[in-house]
Image (cartoon, rainbow, N blue to C red):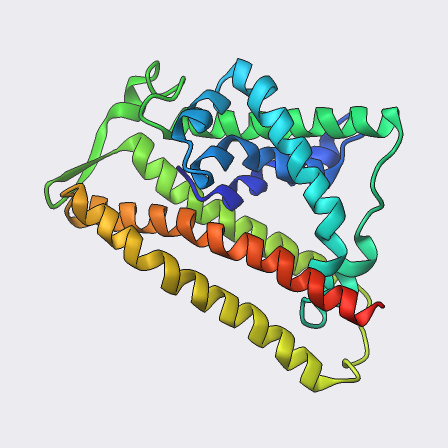
Length: 259
């Protein structure tokens, strides 16, 4: 799969182009919902989520849960970010929606975001809807050792990199358009925030990389496919560590500072 976060690139223009109101956070979350089963080690759930019935029965409920987590933990997580990200993002954290009209927009945005993901994968997965119907997507384009790289797989890897780069550049552009801020009054606090995220990343990788290598070794994959399996499994395992630690750690910090 393309790295799940890269799918956010597909929803960036939607709110501006849509003739109906859309919620940006719900679009982004929706664009990630079809892959959630992978991170829960429920591959059957993710396969189902990449279908029309799954977009309704799996992606929407998953998206609602993720949205609730977003509303509950947005402030603690943003508060733990270093400057200037904290100052610009924290004020944008929304209140929990309570109106039916608001939830209608949220649900539609989740559904639309999920379908940007499903359509993307339809061009880049071996059994994708367009891949099985367009012969040129099944054409071999290069050979890496004993591994044949087909067009759909090349598009999958390239779209992951391009999508992630688009997300980074879009955020950087948005950040540069924000008003200039004074330096943080407590540089030590800012350094501790950087340290928190660096340690979290290091621990997550240290915990997840060995089992990822062990799994890839057990499959007897070699070369490109071995490396790809390690990256894929590391992404899955590291989120299992990083997400709960982030939510718990930032919540404790936020509540201690706002008692």
